[in-house]
Image 1 (cartoon, helix red, strand yellow):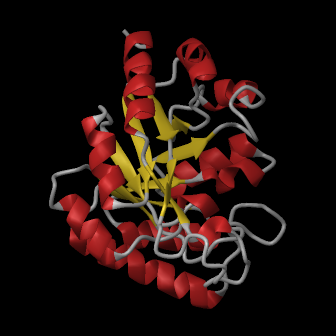
Image 2 (cartoon, rainbow, N blue to C red):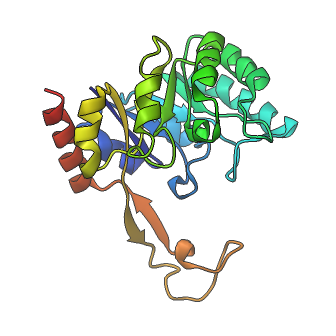
Length: 241
């Protein structure tokens, strides 16, 4: 079984590998589902010999992109290819929630020989089998999906997707209570997320907000939870023997 952990900092990437992960998906701002990380963060992770899949998502809030967004995404793919990442992770939808195959094909072409993963934007797509087949044809190697809002609810869709020779399926929704289901489904590639809150005391309790919404996000950030990762990765390894 290949175990990937989603991380948004150098500290979290190192923690994930020490906890037993095979690779990381590198993003920024996990609290919004992840956006494109900085080149400095990527280089620091790669210099530590960590196998890295890098998200290409120019903004939060959905996956229907403007021409400006798409230009930036294609530039990011080129930059990440030059940096030497294993692969890139993206998703692109039309306004009606169908896959934007025209742009997705351009994205895959720009990625060249890097692995390309279509991320959980896939959950929105209604005809998942047809979309998966077409994504494979244009160069997508793997799809990250729970089959829907949760792995439990989406398990029938996952079973159906696993009947396809390509693309590979990476399962999200990994929790202690889904490990047996993951084993039953025969999944060989899983995606784990974890985070514990850290308070930055420089802004805590000041009542001064630096974003658009006045809330605790100005004083709280998240790092990978080493204890949780060690436990769940250990249990995943044990279940796959």
